[in-house]
Image 1 (cartoon, rainbow, N blue to C red):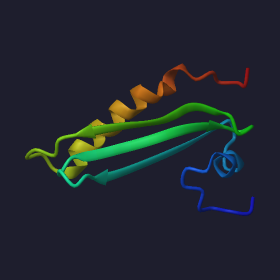
Image 2 (image 1 turned 90 degrees about the horizontal axis):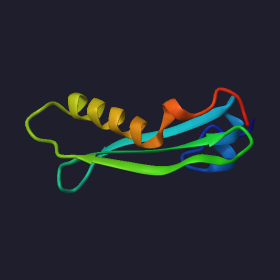
Image 3 (image 1 turned 90 degrees about the vertical axis):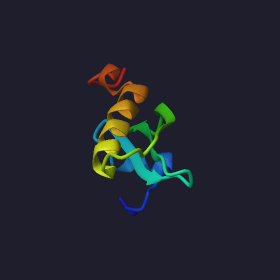
Image 4 (image 1 turned 180 degrees about the horizontal axis):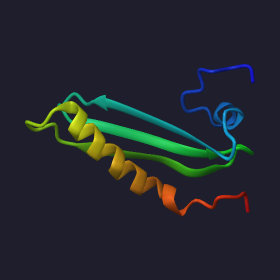
Length: 88
């Protein structure tokens, strides 16, 4: 492996995987919402879950609590629990 700064580059993420590579990011939007986005790439470079984004209003809760909820929602949108344990 030559790179460790893959970000969202599918071919680069594939080098880091044993079966699936998961890229996720958390941030604030200009409106003050917590934004989680991510995608899943298989070790052969195929995108098995395209980029999904979840945006939750910040409200009065701490960032870590909203971020946790955003990640849980993102896991659901990426359908991680439905991915096969072996390559088809």
